[in-house]
Image (cartoon, rainbow, N blue to C red):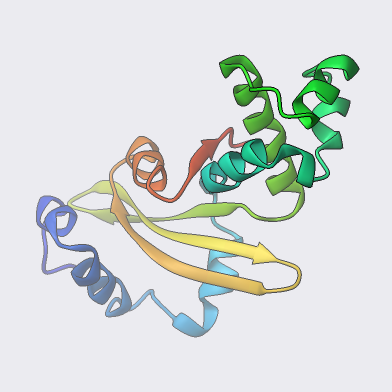
Length: 168
């Protein structure tokens, strides 16, 4: 039972929402990982903008063979880029896509997981972000309480580039 209405709960600052979530009977921190693992992924993001800028600026210093292998550029153009040629906007977009694929393959993806609750007979999502890197392990962070997946995606844009949710 909530002491807040839906609108009051949604209007609370994130920290107050977190306190409310942690005070609920259904919340068990020791089983949070298990609960999130069985909860749907509603958004994925990768933080690649700094890496994209770095790898474009110092293109020849990195192993960027996946960019060539993706078919985004010809071998001749790839060599021109390695020799310091400027990227076109189209090439930057294609390179961003390659880096996103690499980030997904390297588990450098932030997942937003939705735990559904009902307040005032309206379904809301208690959302946690989850990273799962084989070397670092699991990490969960409270993102907030949301009315829709679109709101989650908007919030996740603050953490990086939203990628297609192929896990949905």
